[in-house]
Image (cartoon, rainbow, N blue to C red; front, side):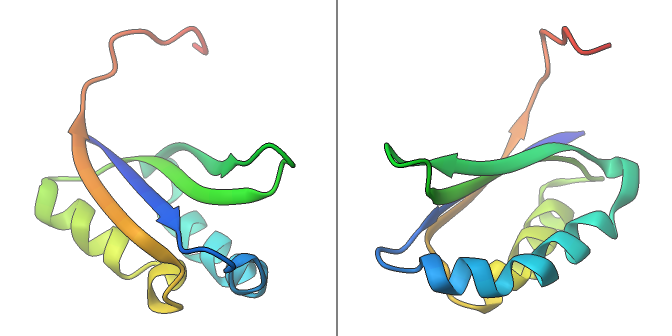
Length: 94
């Protein structure tokens, strides 16, 4: 089953995001092909303001565990973190 992990950064946390990014990327890469895609949301100045990841997991609890163990979460980056089941209907990147 697919899940959306969406985090919105707290204000003035760009330094925290940049310092934590290598650990975050290493953590996400550890899930291999289970991660379909992901990346940051950007503001009008193209600075990151949040994250979006689409991941395959057995169930919602597993997806939440993955999200909650992300180094970004452990660093206190997000003001809001949401994990939701998602159904891919359109995929033009075959």
